[in-house]
Image (tube, rainbow, N blue to C red; front, top):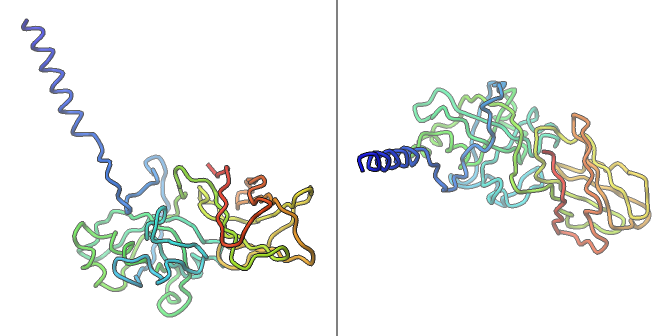
Length: 271
């Protein structure tokens, strides 16, 4: 009987201890999704400001110079930033992910926030530093201790440290948004949700009943386009090449009955 009681007491103690380490299931849009526990990050110095509504995603239309839509919603969840020219990279920096943490203010927590470049800052304060982030109000405030985000936003320009990290979009594959205005002789597509940290070096398209890949031209931001003198034959396959020369083919991702202003999701991902 004593042995049985000891076993029950031991089990209860174990369960109590385990409960201390059970993670919460609550969603936190500012949480860092990238696991850097085994990666030595290369931190650099920069500066940061914020714009738009204090609890907004930055631009009034929840878009930006990369062409992304609804950056206030998941997976971006308003954790976004404009980058100056050294971060935007003529559009090739669109969708790049960073850790960023602020320095030198009592409200700075020292904990890095995970942000994505979705827009360009090309004037004023963004020109007088090698690396400058003009962040959404939510992203800027996320660098503070809990309850002190407004205090941090009132601080103005801050010194920051930042590090490039791979993007991760769990449960999502690469998506292609056919842009408004596309037609049989003009095809423009926004490319979204690529895992990893490689920038796209080339985007190619293959028509139906063809074996030839045709290079698309970077239009602006993360949008690529093809202009032709004859109607294009769908469905289209799209091939992506990143800066590490990794190629990914989304076979027949754009259907024969494609329509402008429509998102087509592939079954491929850099992971």
